[in-house]
Image (cartoon, rainbow, N blue to C red; front, side, top):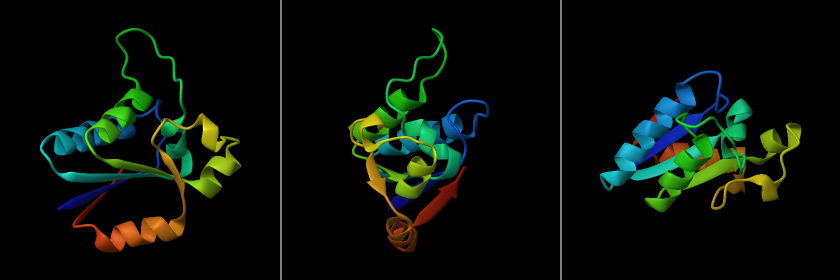
Length: 115
């Protein structure tokens, strides 16, 4: 079963991305197939090198956890361009992508969860 997660919110300031990634990680750890697509302000979740206070969650570490458990992470190319984020600034393993890929993932997914 494929679970597609679409994140629209930034990594911090709301807890939507945090809570969605908690679920994505839990599913991946249970052997479920997980795909994460970051769009809009959600693309900032894939910014490499985030520094947060001790004891605070780290979204880029959570994305690496999804990848470590076999998940896929794609980032909207036009959205990172609009925000001045280069491909080289993305978390290792996150891939520049497009609306065409999101369309294909959506068609193929068994479940689509939007945060």
